[in-house]
Length: 201
Image 1 (tube, one colour):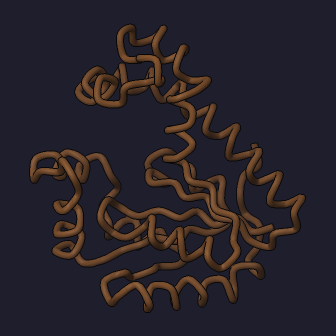
Image 2 (cartoon, rainbow, N blue to C red; image 1 turned 90 degrees about the vertical axis):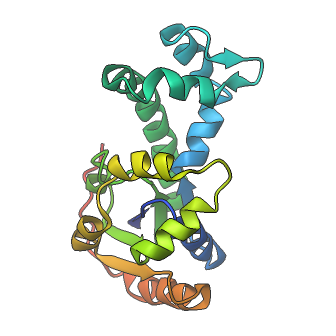
Image 3 (cartoon, one colour; image 1 turned 180 degrees about the horizontal axis):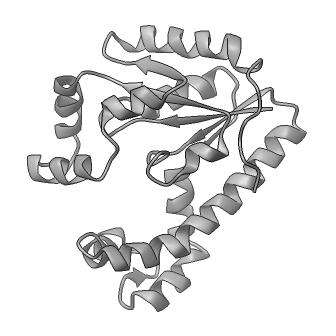
């Protein structure tokens, strides 16, 4: 089974592209959703012990946690030390299940694929992109997003040009989602023939 890593900066259309893969019958693992589940479940008491006061009855309060770690690199590394191994365990379980089901291709949807070194755990990388003005317009339409927040987020992400340089495949969402869907199907026509290059943990 070939594992594709799907990534793209904020506002590029990555979540929609992931949906196109799923619509085509490809198993997709969403790292962000995995984090949400962990924050509401097994990771909550571990994170609360590390950062007292950031949880409630529903699990981790993401706003409270963000205030504790966003401007504190050491705190962020401690949080990542808790959450990344748990996400990778879920990811490994997902890959095992997809392989047992006989899927020729699976997708790992990882926003910070390059930033976390996760590109080493996939066989090929799909980068979702759009021109900077389209990206900014989409991102600023999000609830609670401001110019300042967007700049902070972009500063923490690998630049789009660098992502595209390192990509095996590119999906451009600026020409409409029908065109993006066509690009996904074009990728899937060749994906299952790709060599397995990922480092197995």
